[in-house]
Image (cartoon, rainbow, N blue to C red; front, side, top):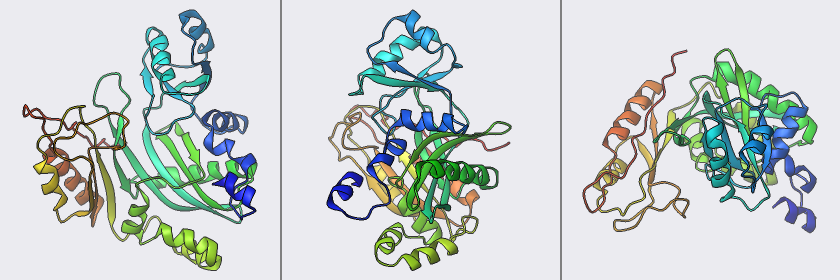
Length: 343
């Protein structure tokens, strides 16, 4: 889009020369390090490298556990946890299968709380639209935890908002972004502060519905008025207070085993629950669940409640009742969990 706008002479919030800091994971990491901003330690490794001694030498400055990830993919595709040096070469080989580039990224693994933050840059200043808890569940030993619930607003806003805004402000002062969408995934641990996972000049997929549900802050309205009525955009941003939700909301993501789906009555029954604002069941009975196919999940549900406590109770009920089975009656759905926030 940015490159097309440049060639067509159309106004756009970014220039092509700025894209690398928002699209290239290694360029983002290198800039964060240059600016002294907190990010996990990382190195780039040749995708074809399988010499264990060479890999150990390249990664000598990093602390285990590590993760390997492609530089040109998003989501959780091609990302693997590396517990120790014995797993290093195997993880590099597996990640290399997911990339079209000559290098992959090896970085330190942060197991702290994770957050999704969406903001809008207005006259060079970062204005916060939302901060959500990005909760994950590890379904198998050694596998990367999968995103299973994003909750709006975060229950840790008071601990993370100020340092997160300050970090993004420093970042865009270097990149030169003066306007437009800006999002960040980041980690936080008590006593250790925040670390950046990803910075992107866009909004998160599957989440614009939640700002509307929780705050009546409509992303489509924001984007349209950015083109046609910028004064209204200013009013929207000035009125937004992430500490004053009208409701508490979440999107629940369900993952499962790679089997044929025979029965999913429970999934349809949950879709009728009064807490559900929008259900999305991705498979029909008789279809095979495929990894990294057109369907990102088995199902997702947008739910809302009057308080975080009520939302958590509803979520646990969904996690307990959700079920899809194969022709042999075996369960397909992985069991989601809610993390403990006692600090």
